[in-house]
Structure formats: structure tokens, C-alpha cells
Amino acid sequence: MSIYEIVILVLSVFLLVLFSGLNMTVQTLKTQISNNTTTIQALSGELTTLKSEINPVKLSKPFMQYSILFENAPRTLPSFPLNTVTATNLEDFIPILSVNDFYEITQMNKQYFLAYPAAGGSTFSIQILSSPYSDRVLKIVNLLRGQNIPAFDIQYGSQFSLFAGVFPNYVAATQYASAISSAIFPTVGSTLSSWLIRQIP
Image (cartoon, rainbow, N blue to C red):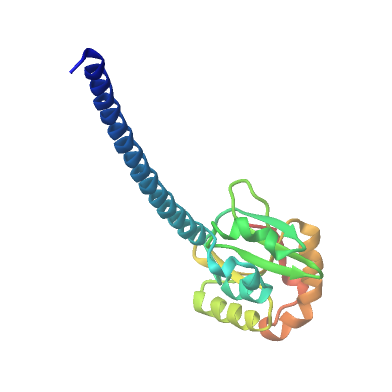
């Protein structure tokens, strides 16, 4: 066998080994790409699940109705600062409602007012009465809610206070008080003159 033939043979073996190595590298890369694709799909599924948890189904467009939000608003609130925002479209409240279990909502004319916990916030409401008997106040809250009046109570020390509506300012609260005074009188027995429009807490 000549030197030339030996060189050709060695070169052929080298190319065969090199091609085999490249083929194995390509196969490894394909496997890694396939594994990465599976991982990305799994992460995408987890992200979709996380999004649905952050934005619950009840906050999707078909469920953003005043009647549903009104019914789910707590009837009792702790004594803490609230901030009230105004909107003409309930969907504007989705970012707030998706992270707040405690809220109160009021509709007046074509506007919606949403109060939620916030340090340094400002919320005005109509304090209708106070009583040391929580069951009495809660009973009135339920009666007023049945009349679509956004009532709730807050405990201050040993007293339980009945409130109606949440508003960003004193003027809006006053207007609402005038609008609901005749509806509240048969249930509560008090008139606008004895109510207190105040800032919460």
C-alpha cells in the first residue's frame, strides 16, 4: 500500500469519525431543543393558570356587573382608611378588585364609586346611626341591601355604625343622602337631618 493510499485511508477514517461526531452533536441539539420546547409549553401553562388566579373568573367582563359587585361587597368593614375612585365603566375597577377582598361600591346616576383599603386615602360616607348592638345594625344593613342601598357597618370601639354609600368627596355624599332619604326613613326611622356625612374611618 502506497503512502498516498495510506493518507487517503487515514483521511477517510478521520472524516468518518468527524461526521459521526457531528451527527451525534446534531442529535443532542435536537433532543435539547425538544426538551426546551416541552419546558416552555409547561411554563406557558403555569403562566396561564397564574393569570387566572390573579384575575378570577368573577372579574371577567360578563361578571363585571354592578348587581354582582354590590352583592359581594362586605356588609361589615374593619375601621381602616379607604380610598374611593370614580368610573363610568366597571371594567376600570378590575385592577383594584383583583387584589382587594374588602371594598364597597355605590352607583349614583351614571357613575360608580369604589372604596378600597389604602393608606392616606379619602372616602366619605353617610353615617345613619350608631348602636352598641351589632345584630341590630347588621339587620338594618341587610334590609337596606335588599332595597339596593349600599349599606355596611363599621365598629368603632363598642359602637357599631351604620353607613350608606362611599364617595370621593363631601358633595357627592350629600347629593346621595338627599336622593335616598325617603327610601331609608321607613326602615330606619331617621331623617337626613340626623345623619352625619363623614370621612372614613
